[in-house]
Length: 197
Image (tube, rainbow, N blue to C red; front, side, top):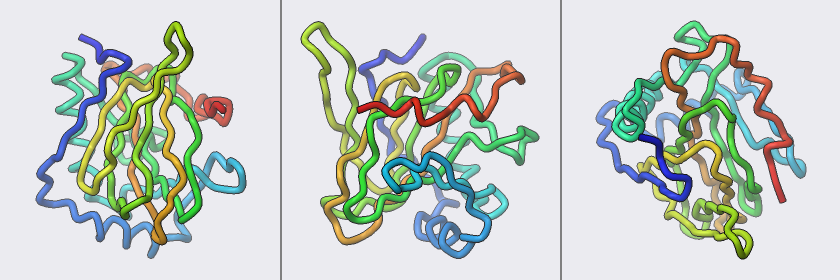
């Protein structure tokens, strides 16, 4: 059973071993270990930090995989280096005041994508989705909220409007893949051409 393209699943997982402020502190205190990708309009879209610096992410991924299994009726995984993969299929998105995330989708071979909100100040923007209909794009928003997880079809386009607060909006994004995983998958097939106007 696949997730319909216009269907979004929302969760408020109870994760006793996860503290959003601790994860955020780990991101900022380990800046020397953060890698970046997708420099778009002068902003780095993706911030990568190894799981050894943020071990609490495992609990987030475990919840996401269980929820995804209920949606897809397939075993799924969030690949990361600690499991022996050559790359991490998760990243942080940090939008400073005045920054936004343009329309994009994710890897074609991912079965689902997800976002977990670590910090969502008032007026910092809610995630928007769109799909092409017979009369053009149909858009809708889903409320972004700290501690909330959203799972959605990886091929659906999404964006976040300008952060109009005076604080950073911070989220964890990830891709989920069905098992058995195609080991020929390449981290480089997610590129700037996946961003749209």
